[in-house]
Length: 162
Image 1 (cartoon, rainbow, N blue to C red):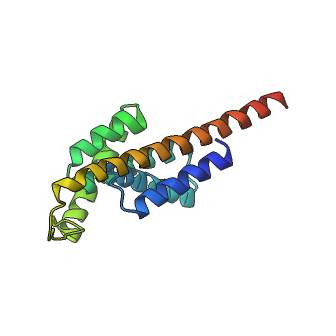
Image 2: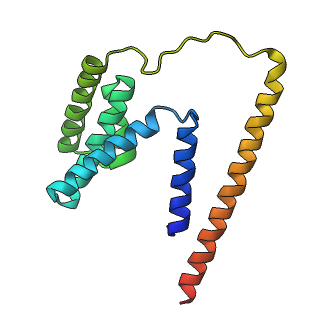
């Protein structure tokens, strides 16, 4: 992936999260868990197979911590991350998932992280503006994505020619 494309996507992801866009809990929690495990494996200078195992365990722990669902974390990580079933992977991912569920439930509790009260509802006549604003953001996102994809295609074509 060319540098401009990668850094452009990173910029837009950070901007959207910084502006409070609802991106869900599962994506960032899985990625944070997996990347923490990958960082640990790099510090430990682990072999590639052990690194893959640790990434699978980190992803299952992240999903389990976000939803308090250790079995779902294990099944997701086995199906989507590791894509290979073995007793070693199953037991490791299950141990990481149960531990993350226990820690998140006992340390952070079951209350929402961002608890806030809604003092007023949006009036009905404003909903049209909200729909237009969402559509304009979608248009901008489409334009930026197409520009980055064209840059990626152009740089890939120039690499093949050289």
